[in-house]
Length: 207
Image (cartoon, rainbow, N blue to C red; front, side, top):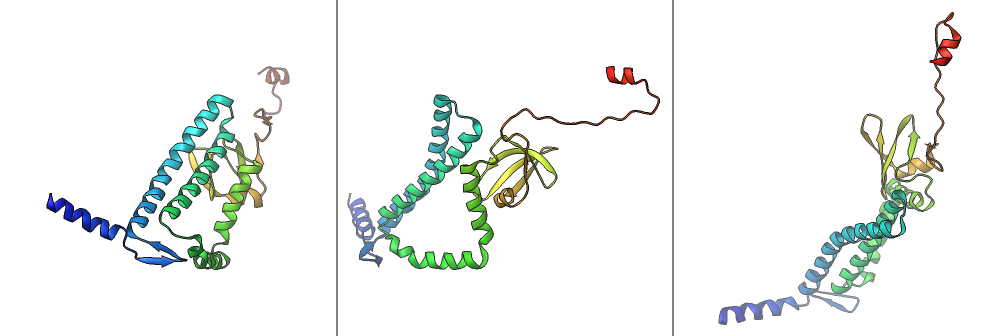
């Protein structure tokens, strides 16, 4: 099969052709393709593995849903970091190549990304310290609702009327938040009722 052999020789030649040299390492199209493939598949696998792990942990140890959500989120980002480093390793790209990019990112954070960084750090604090957790009933700025999800940037609260409110994580640390179910699901509520003057008090009490 001359055509196939010719194609294979052409493919092999350019697969290992050096297109860039970084920190003493040679980068070829093959390296970049494999590295990109690992990172892309890693993003999908990280989500599936974190979900499967959380289900097994719940079934085995009986961990509550709120803790499980935190474990799943932290596991996802950890696996994503592992796959990213693995992909860069197969792509033969040294970490030193990101020194300049890291400096530029730091400058960007200093000028216009303070809120993003603040919400990211706040999300980690919320997951570790757990002043609120998934399933809690909270009140923030006069809005009542259940915490549905705590992400690294924002938290989703299901408010009255089936409205989903996206709240920046930093709001839960910078504002006064009333957590009705922080330590106990049993909540006492005071309801004031009024009746007309002259009403039979015994009958009102019985009702």
